[in-house]
Image (cartoon, rainbow over all chains, first blue to last red; front, side):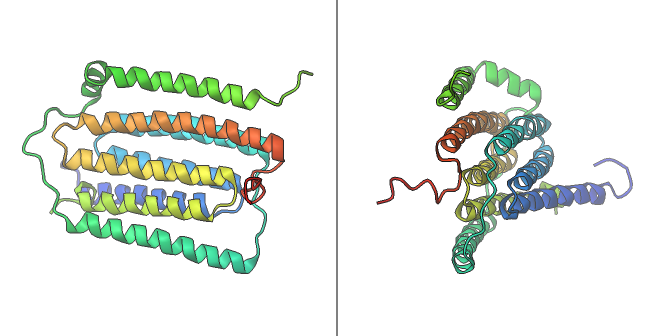
Length: 175
Length: 106
């Protein structure tokens, strides 16, 4: 760490801020009734997630997270919200409470189990690192080891775009 | 002791929390777009878990980053397909509430 006074505490504070952004955004995304606010919550959550990627020493993925999720996915969902007016109707109170309790129970069980699993096991630390994981190393392995997978992902994206166009086009009449 | 941002046991509960919130939303939401957003949260939880293990336990730090990049690409493709299906459903049913889409319900 650098010689800046209390640098560790400042960085820890920024990390906690990222963690809070992640949790708050996710909660907004699932709890708000208006779907447009839910999309905004997803964007906030992705911002926090980008910060987490930065702390995990991958600024490349932090930028990609902002670019793909906030820039592409959230904007696409906003377009769909504009085209389909999908606001949720109010449901009966008793049914809502029952179903909400079930959902909270399932989610709490998943969280508790994974938390116990993650904290109780001692994870092995590797003896050596093959490389530093920089953008240069990512680029090299994308064009050598993972070149076939890289081409396949671009093919999958192309097919997905064509399929989306074909599906969304049916039912439109020529005016 | 490492600082708080340099410990694996901080990132794993964060990913577990994200997964739990995503599953909660998937069970609780009653429109297709809301369920799609919850699905994106679950994708993000998986990516965060991959990156945490990649940073702390993997001998080759490139593998996890490449994998998460592929997850993001597939998530983008999935969103494009799902939204076009949702638009087609909306055009046919005038609704995206899951309760109205029950023609196969006997």
